[in-house]
Amino acid sequence: MISPQQAEHIIANCHLKLEPETVSIEAALHRTLAEDLYADHDLPPFNRVMMDGIAIAFRAIEQGITSFVLEGIQRAGEPQKQLQHAHHALEVMTGAVCPQGTDTVIPYEQLTITDGIAHVLECPAASGKNIHARAKDQQAGDCLARKGVRIGPAEIGIAASIGKAELLVNALPRVAICSTGDELVSITEVPLPHQIRRSNVYALQALMRAQGINSDLAHLPDDAHALTVALEKLTAQYDIILLSGGVSKGKFDLIPEVLESIGVACLFHRIAQKPGKPMWFGHNARCVVFAFPGNPVSTLACAARYLLPWIQSQQGLSISQWVEVHEEITLLEKLTQFIPVRFVTDGQQSKLAIIRNQGSGDFSALSGACGFIEVPSGADVNDAFNRFRFFPLP
Ligand code: AMP
Ligand code: MG
Image (cartoon, rainbow, N blue to C red; front, side, top):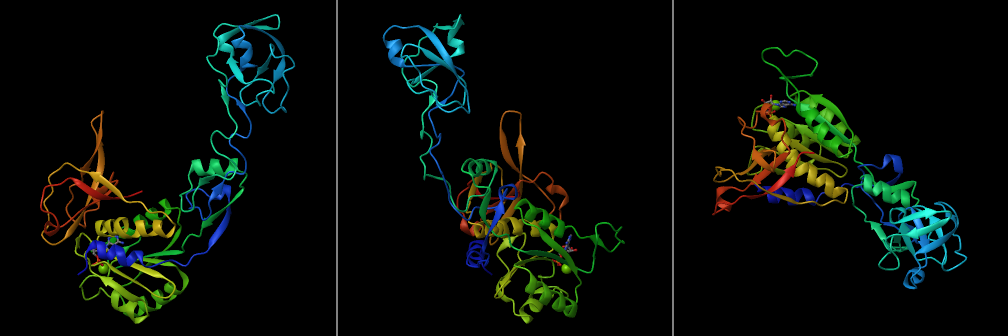
């Protein structure tokens, strides 16, 4: 049996062959950039007035002048005007170009205006006040966002500011999610006493959707022939297949043998972990298959631990998170544990608290879970410690 770190490493060495694609800026949210974004002009592009008030030449203040004849108004969006007389001023509005011949803005709050003359009550201490100098933030050609970044509102704003109506993003994989198990019925049915509703596929679909990835759902029976026919079709059509159930040691846990029989090579089966020990992972030339054990907490923990970081790394993102949890945890001698946690707050401070559940079948306690902490096995830890790798549920 391999360790979670070995499993992570094996998965990381599988790559999706997806070409970048161009999408409109409106469709780019949550995708990842497949290009660097560069400033196409200085930011700001001109000496920008930052306050409504008057623009003057600071030399005039140094010469003791505190009353300024107003020559006119420089509005935002108007071409740059010229101050005609060095001891005069122009009224300026926020967002306007700083007029030629001026270098300092005094806000209305620091002056009074009577009969076209501004009387300064509070003189600025230095030239350049209230002017956002050209190229102070970035120069033309500077990189504003790097390849691999997940596109959020900030990146959308940056892209718009540099005139990108379309963005090159990493393609999204085509994903199929299938449950297996003859005891499972659809969520709209009332289960008979020996049946349960299939919930895992919806949980997995939600996880994918939170990554901006759509997926198709299917349900397969515990029957070798039916599984073979269905999985042959799915592995030809999709980039990623997520399966839940059918990978343990039961007589009808047929997934590993069926997958191998249709040419999906096993890269590992079983990880020294709890929950999710029977997880299976493999690939063929064009698709990758994650086969999770059917217990709902196992499915979710394995997906958070292995699937999400891998999906993100395929999109160019690499995030490793660590958190502190200050609670007693009983270590298992040989198995790494994935323990669900939630944020609790006492009104002052937030902290992570363990969600105590009834084992890997107990989905009911998970509401509010923000992710899983990875607790190494007793063999890997000698001291009490409270810092853990964290695998968030988006
Ligand atoms: P298996 O991994 O197929 O042995 O299933 C382990 C347990 O998880 C069984 O009790 C199944 O009924 C349950 N299970 C399997 N798939 C699902 C699913 N999609 N939703 C809810 N429970 C499931
Ligand atoms: Mg089953």
